[in-house]
Amino acid sequence: MLLIRGGLLTDSERQYRADILCGGGRIVAVGPDLDAPLACEVVEAGGLLVIPGGIDPHTHMEMPFMGEVASEDFESGTVAGLAGGTTTILDFVIPAPGGSLLDAYRDWRGKAEKAVADYGFHVAVTHWDERVKEEMAVLTREHGVNSFKHFMAYKGALMVDDDVLLHSIRHALDLGALCNVHAENGDAVAWLQQELLAEGLTGPESHPRSRPAAVEGEAAQRAIAIAGLLGAPIYIVHVSTRDAAEAIARARAAGQRVYGEVLAQHLVIDDSVYETGDWLARARHVMSPPFRPRAHQEALWAGLVSGQLHTTATDHCCFCAPQKEKGRNDFTKIPNGTPGIEDRMSVLWHHGVRSGRLTPMEFVAVTSANSAKIFNMFPRKGSLAVGADADLVLWDGEATRTISAAASRQRVDYNVFEGMTVAGVARTVISGGRIAVHDGDLRARRGDGRYVARPCFGPDFRARSAQVRNAQVGSALA
Ligand code: URP
Ligand code: ZN
Ligand code: ZN
Ligand code: ZN
Image 1 (cartoon, rainbow, N blue to C red):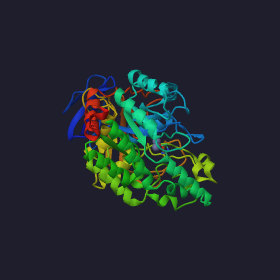
Image 2 (cartoon, rainbow, N blue to C red):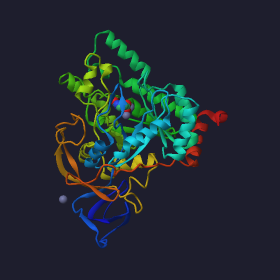
Image 3 (cartoon, rainbow, N blue to C red):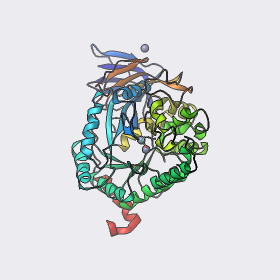
Image 4 (cartoon, rainbow, N blue to C red):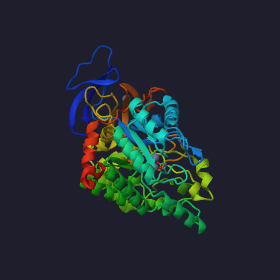
């Protein structure tokens, strides 16, 4: 057993001083001055916050993408996450073109066996046929998958059209599963890319020009409209623009259940990165959606503060220099993605809490509890309640560190936050009731992570959704 003594417990609702006793991987008692049972390890948390372990709801470990495989695997990636206070990830299962969702899911389960921290999966739907329909049902019923992902961009690869979206979102609703979208108009992106290349504009600075804010805003609105038509909730990953954030806020004000995710990277890095440094420095910032002009960042922060945007993630997707080099003569061939899993919590604490934008409780909400609720893992994850998984972070909000690739555990040769000094350090990280990291020292082992099966949503999920649909289109489709 493990007793955490004297910390300031901070969940998404309140802060209070109490001890936490962990046993069998769970929190077994919370209260003042708990007695340490015999042979119980005691961790002193005086002066520290005790928070639920971070949840990163959007990662791509060892993902095959754009002719490369992301350099971070489930072991190195979950180690990096733990070091930064993230104890659970939700990674994206990507089926082969036209392929089986179940085969891809099994493939990901195999790759993830070496994970050091807990993980669950969203499964991507990249085409539509009877087998996909049946496999979505099997995944929700038998394998603890309650969310499906759709790429509205990456034409000729992962992109789906509106027909696939309609079928998939409708079917997911019947199954009690939540759909996610990567919202960018992939036809518009492909067209803009060809225009830029035709003008000889082949460098990484053309990447953001091929994906302007309107491209994201349009797709977000379209996905929201389709979900609204079907009476389905929808989750929009990596919202990076005011346009998309406003579309979400409007839909929510109209009673539609729409959730928005923001990446730590988009919150603090702007599009000046495409105008500075050498080719490689600019290529390293090629991700989709791209980094944006500063005004968009304030809209993202406002969304988190107002509760119109809900979760923070990293879309952790790592490609090293030789991989980015594949696009040396053509920016459309630079593998898209940036790292971030190790630094998300610190970046959110420093730029969120220390800057006065977020309260510590709001920090817990946007780094952990909201993801747990939206993806049906709460209160097992994202809470400090008795019975919850003992995934805890002893958080030092005063200590500072300077982020650098050299000092990082991420398996990638750069860091987009390089040189940034942030307050907020994970002192001790507890995963499944065991000390995983203590003062920078890794104690968790390969394979310690467990698969988190997430039950599908109950009938109320459909009932509430049907009300929205009926309000929007009358009873014709009911
Ligand atoms: O650039 C990115 N985001 N790469 C990963 C794939 C995706 O779109 O999430
Ligand atoms: Zn994406
Ligand atoms: Zn992604
Ligand atoms: Zn110590």
